[in-house]
Length: 380
Image 1 (cartoon, rainbow, N blue to C red):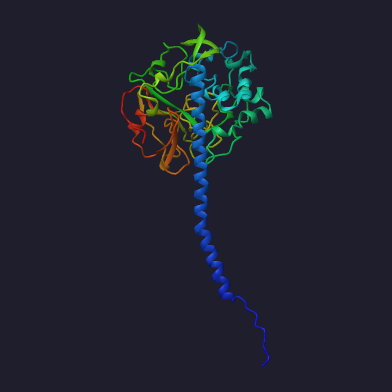
Image 2 (image 1 turned 90 degrees about the vertical axis):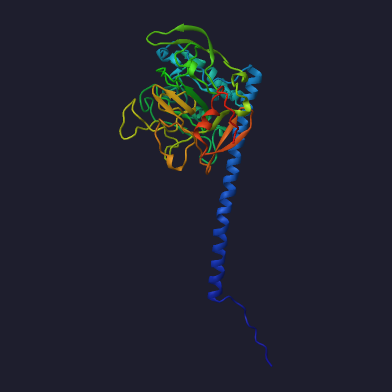
């Protein structure tokens, strides 16, 4: 009997079934891959905060004090009348800890700045500095620190740039500059209404608002104080700054103190700063966007600070951590908040990092931001 070779093959139905099975397996695998990637990004975000905590502790060991929230007041030339409470023009903590984040050359660029007649930390680090003093390569250097960015939100190397010297509201705007995803904890409590906002951090102990700052960071001490014309307050040499507080300032204990957290940026505003709401003008409510982290900012931006409690001039807020239904709230709600689902990473005073639920009680959250309220609230 003659044998015939029969060639085995899939029928069309069998092929379709195999394709369907593969599709189902891929659909089941994809969320797991995405979850794994997000877990890795969140771990990197946690590591970023750990490195910031290490830099803060190394700074404390070397300089015998906590890094100041900002330089505060200083400078004399073109913009000296803005010196009161370091309103616009002086650096925040971030560049001050660069030497302890292996960024000494970048730090030295700030110390050697000579712009508009002011040198070093007395310069005005505004839109004009960003657009006129720095060239393209300089802007890349100053915006390229990956350790200040949460990889779940963005990659390193991004900056908020208004595209002009004037920016949104004039030469003193701080919209242009490097951006980051972490902010200092600010706690401000002025029951009587001091008339000075919590973001205007003075360099003088007797400043109108200074006594109400009860968060983990305060402004630097300056030497050579003098009284400025046209404004209330004292100014000093920004290049002669010193740390103001040691860890003893955090009287409730470093292990019970929030110091740095992931900051909330409204949806659609990553890389954008103080964009007007509904055509509002300067001084009106504006969206709290994504501004340069080099500066304390103006009264609406708060790029380097978020708050656990604000009480000033009749306003009393316990902002908490932004949740899904709060992603587009305006500037009077300076939330912390992350893109990690349901949780926001915080650096604790002892150098540890904790993920805190966005549903935390806002009063307890505020207690964790005050250095000396005596409230025994454990980190959740």
